Image (cartoon, one colour):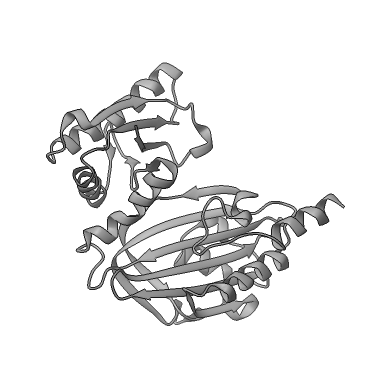
Length: 295
């Protein structure tokens, strides 16, 4: 009975918007495995099933250079069934007046789940049963703001767990990287709605963090365009060592980013640096992350 009530509350009365966010019912009731903020990257938009030809996976596709990409991988609630989740996706696709379905496939018609996981989407959790997979691409073309694509891949693994991958791909009128206002829009929205966002592209490859140059430039431009905002840079560290060591490293990450932004003509008084070690595990992404928090 509890499962029936839960399914009714989730699939009968949910309020949705495309693309999905972490407050969308299907996402909120599950577990977000990975959630990245927008970063510039070339993106392969697949618009067909995939087939292996001469030991290579082929598909009808197009490469979007310099796209602004946001990714989210969600493990759905264990009470959700694959058929119910697929039905909900299709229902929301049909009801989304701002987006046009460009391609969809399901089951064996999509091709190999292994290839979708490892060759196309490159998310290892998405390898599952070929019979229980669903792929869809939706597009929204706006002459003033460029194009936005929503890519969904739903898969049930052999252990019964169900995963949903969502990629949001934004382009500018001619190139996403040249349209700074478009590139900054998701960060403006995140600050206004939730008062923070995670700096994309942070990686640890040595004693200093590595942040994508495009992220640094966009972040500096965001601060310059908002002269009244005071921002806090908050570092997080989940690598080994004692708490004191993780706290020291997390503060170093934030201070390092602050210095890089000051080098890009951001006034020092606009930024403060803080380190939280591993005190916020709910938002963990990899071994380290840096958040921008609005004061």
